[in-house]
Amino acid sequence: MEIKSVAIEKPLEVNFILGQSHFIKTVEDIQEAMANVNPAIQYGLAFAESSGPCLIRKAGNKPELVELAVKNLQAIGCGHSFILFLGNAFPINVLPTLRAIPEIVGFYCATANTCEVIVAETSLGRGIMGVVDGGVPQGVENDKEAQARNQLLKHFGYKF
Image (cartoon, rainbow, N blue to C red):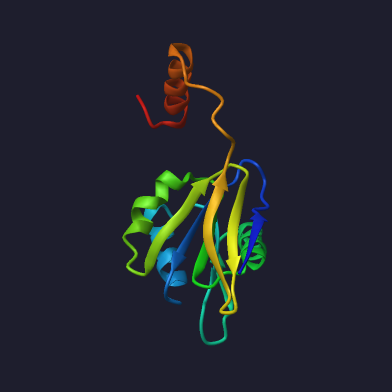
């Protein structure tokens, strides 16, 4: 077995969700979920099927994000995985709806951070082992930093 690290390539401000799903219907179900959350959400999706022709299936309403999703999923190269890039939304806006999709098995990360995907390769193919998402903790927040966190949440509209 060989272990590899695959860096996610994306603009710093772009959020993405990396997950695992088991059925080609994932593409249509995620498209439908995105429209149900908010038809104005911009997104690009790539899903790697793991049987039959083993194609990367793609969808989305912003070509640049679809391209980004395909490029990154090609680099990851693991079947039954998907990556969803978000243009004008945060993962918190769509994760509850995505969790309700029956064929989605789980999520590895939902972030805008610099991220690496840890991939294992065997004679069967490749699988995602996990992710490295962001930096190492540098300390514990104090009262001033807690206030700044609350202000940031207010700025994003998650706290009143």
